[in-house]
Length: 269
Image (spheres, rainbow, N blue to C red):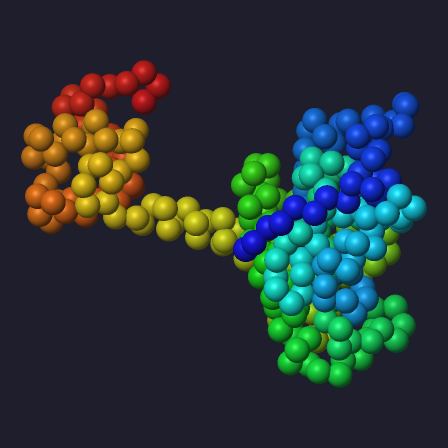
């Protein structure tokens, strides 16, 4: 996932984060605390280009909305438009005080007829755009959950705009579920939350599964202890030049060494 910063510096919402109105502490609270959750949106108009929307929203007179990011429909690139710890205007209601808001762009081959209903002139193209933005949203939300210590499966942590309305924290919108449903895609918000959770742990699993050939290949904080275990022939590996050891195996070996007194027990360890 590629992330590019294009802050809406002219937007009144951005300016209010810099100079909050007197007596209104919502801006300062959000900035100091950071987000408590993440809200997923879909823009509700046939526009796949994030930059078109950014250029339109980055005006002194655009006091309608300001989100934290747009996901481009053609490339999947994430354009960050507010610092993550800025209070945005995206969900309406109290969600603006608690959640980061991210908009997914929509295909230009759909036409809205009424409310959340639309027609589509090229289903394959439309599905490609929606799938691309979905995948980028999963990666972005996984990154933000790690950054801010959020549980993607926690109650009310990751919600759509539609779910925010049903929870009484956002205005009456149907996105983004209306787009997925209208295009016949299998995506749901429950599935999205699971995908974010899996993405977080997929990265952890990849790191844990990395196999190291030599002590010098390992993270530095393991090297001294593992070298002692290698010197004592407690760790032998597949060959003298191939320990073939994972980080999880290294932790277990160090724990064993400390429990048996082979390694010095460290404070707090």
